[in-house]
Amino acid sequence: MLSIDPATITERENYKFLIGSIIPRPIAFVTSISKDGVLNGAPFSYFNIVSANPPMISLSIQRSAGRQKDTARNILESKEFVVHIVDEQNVGEVNKTAATLPPDQSEIDLTNLTPVESEKISVPGVKEAKVRMECLVEHSIELGGKDSPGCDLIIGKVVQYHIESSIYENGRIDPRGLTAVSRLAGNSYAKIGDIFEIERPK
Image (cartoon, rainbow, N blue to C red; front, top):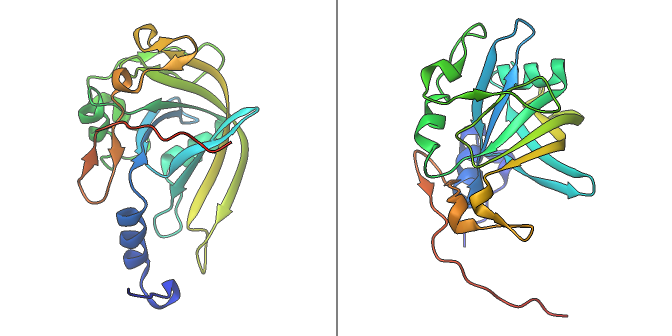
């Protein structure tokens, strides 16, 4: 077995090691609004649950040469954002929003996604997602980087859920109905695949 000290390899090599080994990763499609009112949309796979009490999720938004991405800047200015679960039906449209655009252009305009008003925050979501969560910023932390931060870690508190009724029954979401996709490395994604159960010890 190889033993590698991450301090001895490049940032790119660390990146490739992490995204190749920490798989599959859920994908958050995040909408936010700029101070000029531009609706931004972008996918992020450094995303997960933080807590159920209160319900909180995390987003780690990487910087480029120390510069914040539009999504991070918008979220930290407005303190609001919407997280959508990426699925087999919307992944193609969501992928279009990964294009690099200037801050005054909306990635949503590149897609066939449909903005829809939120109930508790001012940031719209998109109606093509089977699950979306309206969020308020709970915490934000600048992390990493030798000379400047390498990422913005954002903890959001979920203040409203929206769930397609056909996949939600008895307080549970049907994973086969959700058809969520996950991120691997490079251009690769994965579907849910086989589902199996193992009983937890008491």
